[in-house]
Length: 140
Image (cartoon, rainbow, N blue to C red; front, side, top):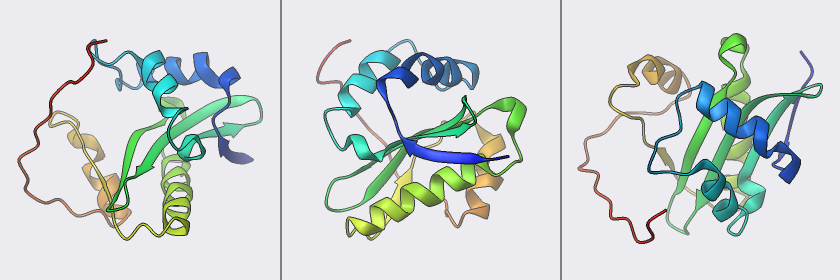
């Protein structure tokens, strides 16, 4: 495997959305095209894709608000799981966040997505109890 990790390019849009759909990351209330468009306006350098040759095999979207970093849309091709794609994407995103002075990174995992717990634990992520809440400001 010759994995290349680079910032997202507009030509990656369809393969990225397809990967997100294939991995169950999309939800009816989050338009993936709108999410991509919004990310390209804020820290687009933190939206990364993993390529093996011309095949898009992974993604991660990161952000930093000056207090902590966040990871979203971490995905690797189901056919390529276990090859270290997700790990390499997280490591690269963390490097970029550290370069920005980010002291801590967090992510959210949907309750039903229990199969990823061991993966995140292997990367040093620790679960903690919080009450997550949110409010939609713009209806898509």
